[in-house]
Amino acid sequence: MTVISTVPDITRTIDARGSYCPGPLMELIRGIRESQVGDVLAVLSSDKGSKVDIPKWVEKAGHRLVALDERDGYDEIVVQKVR
Image 1 (cartoon, rainbow, N blue to C red):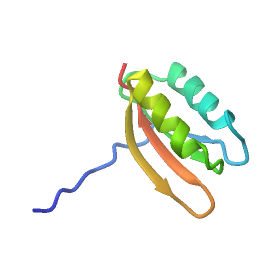
Image 2 (tube, one colour; image 1 turned 90 degrees about the vertical axis):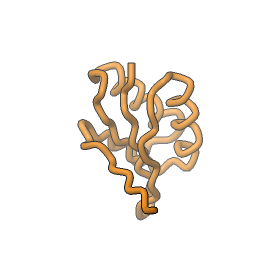
Image 3 (cartoon, rainbow, N blue to C red; image 1 turned 45 degrees about the horizontal axis):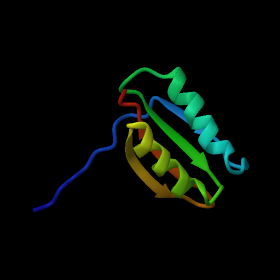
């Protein structure tokens, strides 16, 4: 059986490449506050700590981690606002 998971359409992209901890996380938090429930935000981050810190925060804050993909020189972390 093949399970195909689809990523919802991204509502907003936050380009935090070149920003260092805690910058990308702080930009995501600001983006979440400005977004509506159901919105999907993609954070682009070249800070290696982001792929640990952001998923931890997402879980703690009660949102949903949709995807975490390594790109060429940065990570794309996709989050859906749940509440």
